[in-house]
Amino acid sequence: DELKNDFEFAMDQTDSVECPTCGNIYENSFAERFAIAKDEDTCKDLLFILNSDLKKIIESIQSEYKIYDKNNHEQEKIKEILSKKQGAVKLKDIILNEGKREMNLLMKEEISSLNNEIYNNEQQIEDLKEDLKEFEDKKRKKEIRTKYFNLMQSNLMKLDVLTMSEKSYKSITSKIAETGSGKPRALLAYYFSILEIMKEYSTSVFCPIVIDSPNQQDQEKANLDKMLDFIIEKKPEGSQLILGLVEMNDISFEGNTLTLNEKHSLLGKSDYPVISLEIKDLLEKCE
Image 1 (cartoon, rainbow, N blue to C red):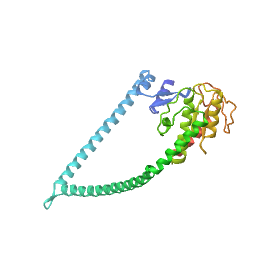
Image 2 (image 1 turned 180 degrees about the vertical axis):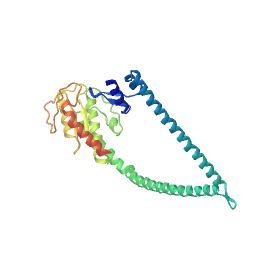
Image 3 (image 1 turned 30 degrees about the horizontal axis):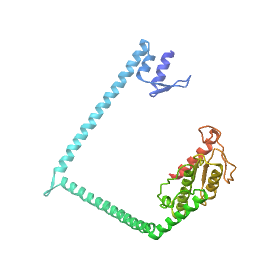
Image 4 (image 1 turned 90 degrees about the vertical axis):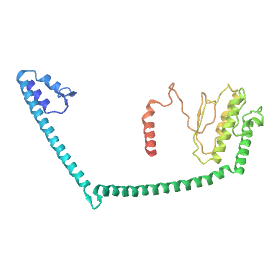
């Protein structure tokens, strides 16, 4: 009786069934149902049901064939209508010409839209060319180069880099060739000169300044103090600074101090949920 009940229950279900005892989902295929129908009487019932299903499928196939034959008949009638002539012109030709006319209208609309887009793009190009003239202005270029050179001289002096020749850093695209412990300080002077120029003359977003471990080439304490004071003092106004240090060196820093205690990890596990929500909010605003 239990097998019969299980079989009847399975027949009423979809391709999968949930076990009422454990809650797991099991496949409800023919093979699974057949496994339940183990005795002869249940197998006979199953055969009867399958024969009934087969009959329905055969009837469905015959119905589809009738629809197919009807569609073929309709197709022949349409071909006959299209081949009839109205005067010297076939109905087929009239439909074909009407299709061409409609396509021509669509093409003209598309061409008009593209021409408008081309015109707008050309206007934008002209506007950008006008903007570009300002940046290519010789007077402006000279002003930027002079400002950079003066900043570079001043920064090198503040960082006590006295062995570099003016020729080696005169160009904005100079490659800093200083050696030894003076090189990190010379690079710092160069980067902050460029940052100051960008802050004053660029229209793009000024991103945060990130400096990790400025104590390179084993700086003397006096020079390291100069570097740290220089970084804080010369930070462009309104900019954000992220400074990574092994030791604080008793510097005066107005911002927040974050101490990293977990090795190879910047974000603590307990901070993740809050930061994750902030990032998701920013990403949603960018969509």
